[in-house]
Each structure stands twice: as structure tokens, then as C-alpha cells.
Length: 122
Image (tube, rainbow, N blue to C red; front, top):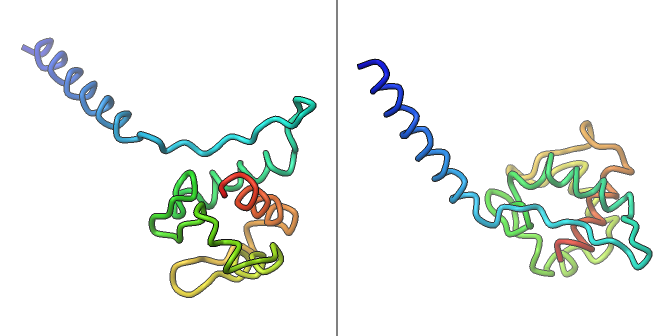
């Protein structure tokens, strides 16, 4: 009887694991393309890592939005024509929804994630 229950439990867990994988869909953080020389730019790779760690959970893996604003539709350039304007929002937060990251990210990390947003997500 115990063996039967163990096999049933394994089947149930397998089903839910497959369901979880299927629900992930296109939840992939966009890769940084290699440059013409085949190398990857370090700042963009760092920005991707920061995006995945601090931003994707609210703004979506590819910037499609969610709890946070949509950032992959080009409107970021309308609202923040200069990257420097984004530094203030990332460092100090914005309203109730966007937390401040000034205690979590250095200036160079903030600049790297801004480059990733502007160059890869858009």
C-alpha cells in the first residue's frame, strides 16, 4: 500500500512540475548579442544580470510589464529621453510601486541596467 501511494505521489508531483514548466512559456530574459568581433560587451552582460535579479520580477523578463511598468515598447525614450533621467527613478523609486535601489545598486550597476533596458529590451 505504501509503495502504491509513493507512486501516486510521484505522478502527482510530475504532473505539477510539467504544468509549472509549461506555464513558464516565454519568460526568458533576452540575451545580449555578441558584437561583430564575437565578444560580448561586459556592461550589457552585467545589466542583464542585474535586470534578472532586481527588475524582471516586476517588469517582466523581457520588459513586457506586470506589477511594474512595461519597458519594452519604446515609450521609455519618450518618458526618459536621456539615460540620466532613469538614474533618478531607479535610485529614488517612483510612487508606491517602484522601490528605491540606491542602497542595492552602485552607480555603475545602475548605468549597466539602464543600457540593457535601452539597448536590448527596446
